[in-house]
Image (cartoon, rainbow, N blue to C red):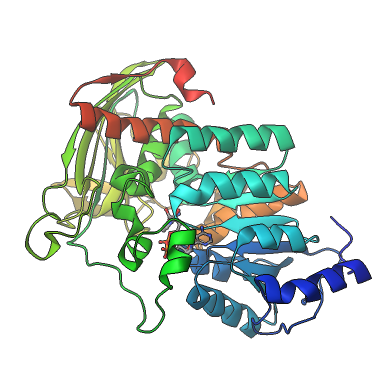
Length: 452
Ligand SMILES: NC(=O)c1ccc[n+]([C@@H]2O[C@H](COP(=O)([O-])OP(=O)(O)OC[C@H]3O[C@@H](n4cnc5c(N)ncnc54)[C@H](O)[C@@H]3O)[C@@H](O)[C@H]2O)c1
């Protein structure tokens, strides 16, 4: 951890910079103050956030629940987001310096240990690489990048700088997923897995707006690469800023496929289109990305080929979001939605001791076992300490758990659950599914494609 005492040189530098773009108007800060308004205790991690928009504020609030994390700075090109985040932090007695441009923040904030990045996908690569090179550990939201080259640069920068780079596929830190994986791998409840299915179905979308009077001026929009307020707010629809629904939603679930199968795909076929959001009230809006995609991946697992079909729909919410694994002895549904987690045993398969105690429901015309951490962990029906620890963890918020894993790794007490090279593999799988849609052909992968 760095010495965070402020030198006279830094003070003068900061005061001089106040008129040159550094915004020191956030709550708890005033012009001419030093660059670290919050007093950081020796055992605290000094953290900044870049892009406290919708998800960034979520991560901010979840980080504030983690002991030993102190925010010193916020950077966002949008004054509305700056104020919003700074006000939250003020309520938690964490006054911060506020910046419009993250590069100024990196120049001035010399006590930071780590940065959370929650900006739109297209700037993740530039910002992550700059933060890593500034000596900071980075938690960057998924999708890593909307280009493979961007994602590759992130992996390379993490390797070069030897700093930690966690990507926000938070299922990797979710105890319910870890529990399901143990049942699949240790208890072999599915037998030989042959097929997977995943979906993210959501209801018709509305355009994202912004509070009246909070529009960014056109010069600022242009400076940061946005053609209009609409594109700034609805960036997910545009190829320049996003990898589309496959990257936005599919990446979480395709990541689970390769995690559970311990394997990357050898091919993907996909069909999709912008079929709904180009007509009616959406006509003339210039949306670009597919609003629906259906993809079929093939995974060459050691046990044989596993086919996985995945769909993302933006017009109907039927079934919501979940991942399903099917084997010759059973099937399992796992979801970030804690209400969905079930196991169906094939009638011919071995009955486990723990089934006697487990909660059963009628689902899909059959008896299903509700997946409950702690109850079903061990094959002999004993509640293992490991299961009980997972149970305790599972009471926490899913994003908090992933952030905790990151901060623990920064402190040297844990290994990242979703380091950059793992997330890169998922980035390849989802961005190249878009390529399969585009070209209308089957895209083949070589194992080397998954190495940055
Ligand atoms: N892990 C998850 O479950 C999850 C959920 C939602 C979003 N996300 C990810 O979080 C990220 C943000 O998504 P969101 O929904 O919060 O978007 P958002 O548009 O609500 O927020 C983005 C923020 O970044 C700011 N910004 C834009 N360009 C910037 C730049 N160049 N420099 C600094 N700030 C900039 C905007 O002003 C805004 O405050 C995306 O990568 C998204 O995929 C992850």
